[in-house]
Length: 191
Length: 215
Image 1 (spheres, each protein chain N blue to C red):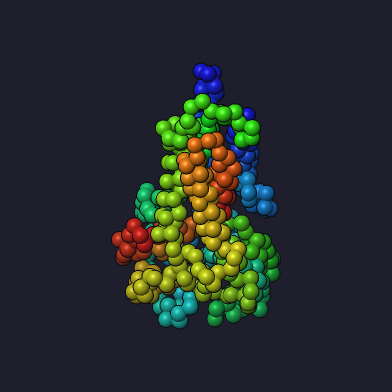
Image 2: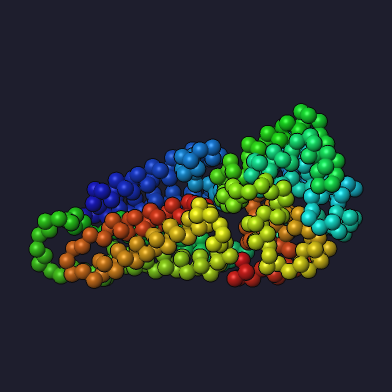
């Protein structure tokens, strides 16, 4: 009987202690004792990163690619040919954005989807396009082309936030998907 | 006896309150100040003529199109359904751990796994609070695994590495459910006191870790 109460007390202490780790995810213990949800991708909290990236496109969370990808994408030479466009930045700005992306990359995050991306991209060359990640393309392969490319409200998988209504917060759950012009696509089992 | 019952009820209430706190934290965890990012993004992309040409899209045709037909993000209007297959799986998993805890608290005070005295009456293997809770826990564990197979079948792939979080989650949760089922079965078919709490507690712990891995 006494053992039961000891176990229950330990459980209670562990749960209570976890509340102190509101934003902790720097180390394994921090992650283990953090009972806040970390299922998705860490949202962007850097204002400069948010502003600079969203001038042209959705500010993709750094946790969507591993550090080696951000290293390859966010340097002066690569930005001059950023997917066919000159997206050059001032050195100071580039450093801030580069450092933020690398520090919060998938392989440095404890968030579940980031960890999935990190373990799947450990081997091989650095992926440069989020939409070409095996994990991302697999999650979208059952969605007919007419709902993406053929959909004037979406057009491309690159526009994450067209369907993922909480994408700006880093939430990509299927339960939060609302495909424009196809409001009833998600059924019970397709979720 | 009355004192013990009160103490037990208080402990249960504390556990439930703690779990409620976690559930509350779940809803607020990611509600961060994002420097008004969704609104800012929506405003900027709607006004920027460069948007389509700078878009890192795969398909060239998209990059060449104008963006006039692209509406603003629908975040404000959409409301996630309160019950879906995934949420059902989540609730079942949390329910399993909760009931496992209650089962542990309701365990009879035999305290004898060695040198047990001979019993004058047959051992009760049904009808007690502990056995009812244990069977409910086992049923919830089985339902959790089944619902996980149904709604998350597309999240587990052979080509993914061993350390993939979803794979680890599935392995641990299945092992945990099997351990709990084994413990219930072992105890239910024994007419003498039998050690089954270790397997049950290990199963509950495995399930707890499995939940944490994908929480």
